[in-house]
Image 1 (tube, rainbow, N blue to C red):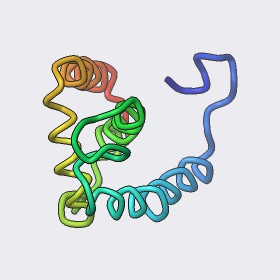
Image 2: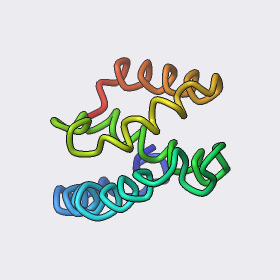
Image 3: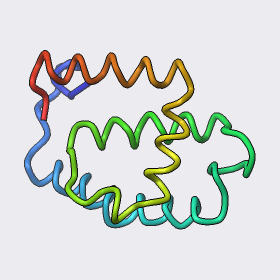
Amino acid sequence: MGPKAFDHENYTGEEIEAAKSALFEDILPRVNIMLSKQKFLISSNEPTVVDIIFYNEISTAIMLTNPKGFKKTFPNIEVWLTLMGEIAELGEMDDNLLHVIEKYKLE
């Protein structure tokens, strides 16, 4: 949900690019390294609330930005996203978000 929903101004292009840069150049590389050692972020055997929170943020950002080369650049995150997406409620959430993105042509 964008800032307009809260009566704020839209983000500037610079703010959007800074957020994308932070995500793709700092946060995702760190998460990818964490996931190279285990299946989930905190526990090696099962997802925790941390995985759910990060999943919601990362999967939403990926759906909205559709970055080229994501699977190749962040292979451990791709595997983790697949595992997390198999949780029925998260998969349903993803389907609903994709529907909203398509309906409103959010980019």
